[in-house]
Image (cartoon, rainbow, N blue to C red; front, side):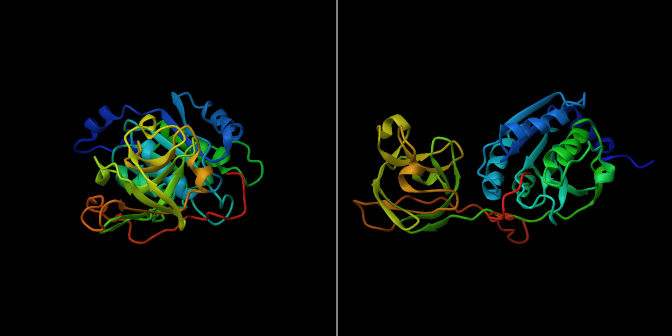
Length: 319
């Protein structure tokens, strides 16, 4: 008899099973807000083997696939193996994009639309296999309309996986859509990069690694979307930056953030997800080796080709 993905036997399988401390956990990452998320949680609550539902965020900017992919990878990778990570940022809901589930090398699962949002986390955890969800194979609640796959398809699929169902029981094999984050560019006297996330405080989180700025307080010349923000310090904490002061810090994501102490840097500068940022070396030194010493740029993602934003900017639709 053919075994399901959750029943495979082989070298190391018992060891993997013992380490799946996240089994029964489902995390939720969406852009739909708390009221719609509650409807997804109502579906998950019907499954007794789903022992914990953890909200990562429901406040991602609407249809911002790139921001969702960044946050999902940053947050979900810290969970124990065996957890199911359900992400619904789905501008193409009800359309041609495929609904998918992914099995990772550490025993975790990902569920959501195949628009690029799952790919970075899948690669981080080790992409093992993916399927296109078959509605006839998933125990679906009564469906109302075609605009809420988060409740009507993804939540039941995630619950099935959290309850021990094998991946292949939910659909046929599928090639996950590739996706790559924009890479920062190292220059002789600094970096050129992009804002990947604006948090609820208005801090602008970039893709520029912060390790190359260690111990260098600047000031650094900063431009955002072509606007000169002047010479800004590189502070260790918000407090050391000084109230009302705009500056740079090492974010908890391991990258440089643009922050306004006791204020909203996004509102002050007009910065948003996708804004281009340029950081030059300390203004009192000559350009070149005296600027921030860039570490080796991150290795390119093993994804075979860029996947783009997965539909950002399309007409709004509830996921």
